Image (cartoon, rainbow, N blue to C red; front, side, top):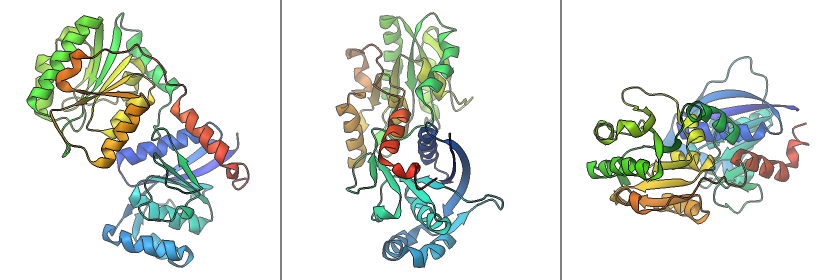
Length: 340
């Protein structure tokens, strides 16, 4: 494989980091990727409107000024990149400026928010943006492929004679407000579903899960139905890949689209769990509806989990990382020409 030197710009947002890492994972199907992660923080967010206007009008004139608006940590001995990749609006401007400076290609994941698509080599989105260089993805990129998930999940599959289901617990946001009744309903349903389907649970809470939610779940879940649990507030562990690889069914609270995307990317049946009190923003609701339309998730109220039937585990047609690489390689002859 030919080497590809990639600079990955990070704004410190975990979800953005994971999407960039996921895109790199796809590139590794065709290249020997040499990555350099660069922390780059926008010092003056209120200037974004002006920055957009200037870059759209004359990139060559304003790229160096844009670069000065960022705190960017580029190592002294770093060579030059073949490709710059970033995710999220705050990195879009520095992505353009550095690509102009080093005369390299650049990929961007996310909404353009008024930026001219031609300022990037390729723009990766879930919804079309009406540009020739737009790659419309089935799912946002994730950093772990199916083979890695299966390998990570073996530790639990090999240690259990039971079928395993996975429960991913988030927490309340402005749009999703989980109360004690919701958590009690989830715990009670998990107990009854375990008895009904003869399974055990892999369950993990997260940064967003509050103390009250963890307390209810720990007190009301029958210890006998738990194959493994991570209570993030008291003993956090990085266990997501193993749980997604081992679980035959994935359940996930609906408050986190990135968590749902990771679940869907595992290729298993996914159930998203709603509280009684929720009102997602239009874009969020549209994203969920797309997942439903593709048959990748079922949306269920916490109080209604026991009334649903859960299909046997069936994989999607293809690992999303491989699918994304196919989209890139089919649309980008520049990878074999312009980067050579």
